[in-house]
Image 1 (cartoon, helix red, strand yellow):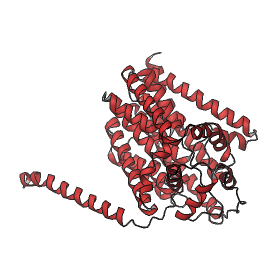
Image 2 (cartoon, one colour):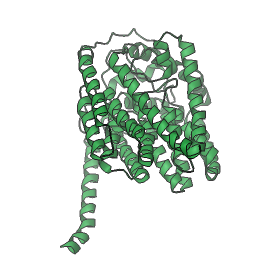
Image 3 (cartoon, helix red, strand yellow):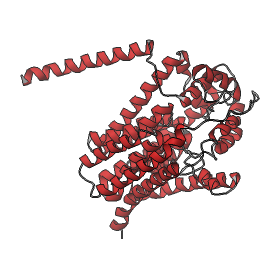
Image 4 (tube, one colour):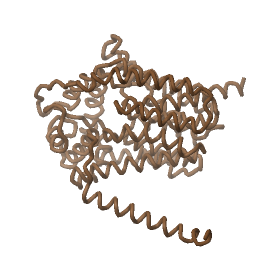
Length: 455
């Protein structure tokens, strides 16, 4: 029976693959209804179609008209901007060949596949149990992206796979993956700088990839559009959510405590640059023991504070926490994993956070390496209490209609009117504290063994 089973296994796997492929093909032709409001993907989908017609994707019109055809906005004049460089918007053009329901389902498949890539890379790099990594990746990286159709998961997946490629000395593959991750430049740039600085074999390959990206930027859109993105769109986007309680940037925090907008943004930008330098300093000290640190350290630092950070991007810190936990087996490292896996889903899915946090706790404790389950349980209990207190306000939240917008206005301006209605709450601040405490734990766990060894 064992021999027969061994012979049948490839056939069964092949049949399963055919069934899955057939199901996906059928769903693309007849896409299932999707309850999630893919606000981010809708914006990128529309912007790509606008760019393909030679129009400006950063202006209120025709972006607004396209978005409301696909999804009903929370207010009639609402618009979600597409603050990506022209070459990144152009990457969404293949989706515009599909109707929006089909394109939305195709993007859902991309996000699920990206989560699988992250899972596979971390399994190979850490050797931790599938249950533990799968649970954390699913609810801390995949779930927030599925809710809004976010792009952040894709560069996280590409960079995670590039970290594995560097460990295995697959230099060409690593360079291609890091170049593709430039679809979100602020996330990929610190990784490219660190890789160029510390991996000599990657330098000519990254230089070639950089030249290709420059050529793609020129080919994707007229040069004036690229200049508009750098000089108008980015500055406008940096302040578009500065009054938003769901914004995790240092700039938004400083502004909430009374600093002016220009000063808050300047400090956030300076902190982003300083953290990039801190990433180089850290990698220089741990890369011999942890070669993949050249990717995961700067990737995590890129989403800590700065001028603009969304919750979906915070998941970029989770791979570092898991890798450090696997290497050091220290309580701070496991605390980082637990806190990230608890705080992110709480913030992303109000009303389901307690269940998700329970799943995380079960997965982590199943590994039986945590000496302080009572501390984790206390954090979960506090989060659930605050969540219950927060629910009435969220359920009763009503958006105030924004004023009519001139067609040529940058989309960031009406978006700011809408985003400013998400005022900070005790619950949101609690989540902020958990997230930054998590990163502090992971970073300390990474550096303390090095300090002891070299004392």
